[in-house]
Amino acid sequence: MNSTKKTKMGTLIAAAVALIAMLVLPFMGINNYIITLFCQAMLYSIIVYGLNFITGLTGQMNMGNAAVYGIGAYIYALLTTRAEMAPWFAMIFVALAGWFVGVILGYPSLRVKGVYLSLTTIAFNEIVRLVIQNMRFTNGVNGIRNIPSLGIFGFTFNTPMRTYYFFLAALVIFTLISIRFLKSKYGRVLVAIRDNIDAVESCGINLADIKVKAFVLSTVFGAIAGGMYASFMRYVAPNTFSTNLSISFVVMLILGGRGSVVGCLLGAFIITFAPEALRFLGDYYQFVYAVIVILAIIFNPNGLVSLGGRILAKIKRISVPAKRGANG
Amino acid sequence: MLTTIEQLLVTGIATGFLYGLVAIEYTLIWNACGLLNFAHAKTITLGAYIFAGTFLKMTGNLNIPSLLGAMLVMALFGALVATIIYIPLRNYARYIAIMATVMMGTAINEVCRLVWGVVPLSTQGFLIGTVKIGEVVVSVAYIYIIVIALLVNIALQIFMKKTKQGRAMTCVSQNKMAAALMGVKVERTMVLAVALSFAICGVIGCLSGPLYTVQQTMADMLGTKGFSAGVIGGFGSIPGAIVGGLILGIVENLSCLVVPSIYKDVVAFALLIIFLMVKPEGIIKANREHKVKEKKKKSAEEKV
Image (cartoon, rainbow over all chains, first blue to last red; front, side, top):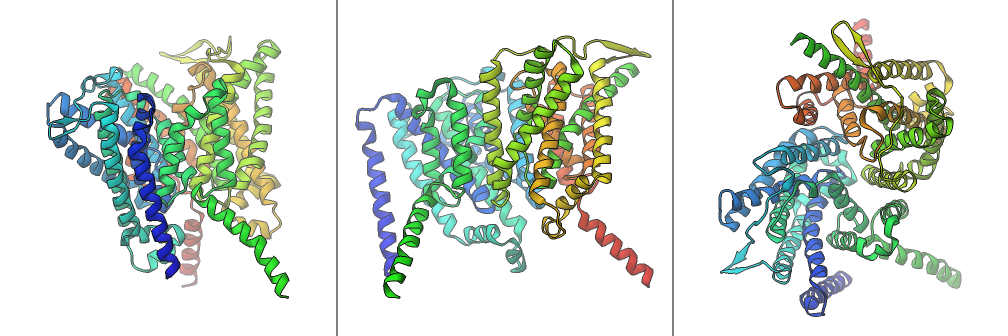
């Protein structure tokens, strides 16, 4: 009891320190480009939170998150530029679009057991990219320019610095929602589905229903992140939302540690900054990156969050026999 | 109009056989290892590069030795990949293993870029030209695709039904535990299945080289449509793979009559989603439990 309280306090303090660090970070004399990267990483964190509900907890792989992200971005862009809708009002439609996509994709593919979700979502990603690319309404490959940014009380988030704080606030909100969801009835059922699917079914829980709900929540997260992206970049083009981006999201989740909020954050930030950190590799960057990820998956399949626990367990395993030896 | 339909049908059948081959290639790995090989598009590309970039140049455009050489190299590569990646990963959660195969695809793609360069290669004089059958103009490449796909299928069926190794592979795909208890070397069978699958990838790469020109993104669409073909035909079933491929090829080509041809790919993927909604088990059901249940039912009825 005491120890759980202690760890709770520890996590709270760690979270507070991280938050303060993030708050003062823009004043540490870093340039706009790095701030932009931080904004990107925060957006990706929100998407990976969503991905965590379905891929991280139930093990059903969603390979089409970039399409959901793209749909969110395009709906925001089209509504604010073509229909001249107020940005916040457009965000409501973005969230609705996320919900709709979740229902139409989740229902057919989560009803049946197997790997069908990965296959439908890959197909969906291609459909969305192709349709956006070829329709005149979305301005084809040229994309949409001059998208108005979101704002609050006449204060528009139009510089990287302002967007940084806006995204930070959004990230905190989504983190809280995500933690709440994982601790809720639904979150526990999802963990149970991962651990023993037959036991869950025998408890009389409607598996398909709960999976679809988790999937819908994940697509809503993705679509909202897309809307925020459009407001931040003020320009959207179809090539951004490729299958490769979807794959990156899953890599973030697995590398960081599935099922845990900290893991999602770690993964999103590491993968976003990886191209910068590995820039010295030049032409060989992609290859080295792929090999590192493969090795990380083979040797540490539960992600970076599990690394600390594994090292501790090893130390304990070494020290425990020594103690026994001393007693015996 | 009728000629157009005939023309589209022929194209559809040929591309259908190509999709079918792709579906067979990943079904082999799925059955043996329980893994989806998401790197298969890149594996096909690698096969095409080995064929066009290395063997054709080395042998001075001798087609058949180059094809066989590419198949052999791909099979060896498959055995290597199986031992390094697939076998260590088979006990992990499935999506982790799938992710490893995706990253392997990225690595293969980069190797292709670093070794053979970014300029697309051409397969000079390989499967070029057309033949006129009645009113319909058929490209030589299509005829070869159909013939070779049929040959591969027949060879695979003979291998699976008649040889000891092939029957071991079927056992492993049905029940790994029982197979191991019966003395089948499960890991060796898995290596063999992956090697076979990669060799088929090599064949697909060679055949699709003249159609899409050898470049890094040549097989991306092909790979994804191969997945659709597998689901339509029946996931995990080899005859289903060919049936699904043919349906997909014909439907997507005939759809050009109704919708603009840019949306041909959209039709193919929409077909996948429709099939999942209406008939998720596909046309030919692969599930063996189903067959066993039917047999039990029959025997029970006979007893009555």
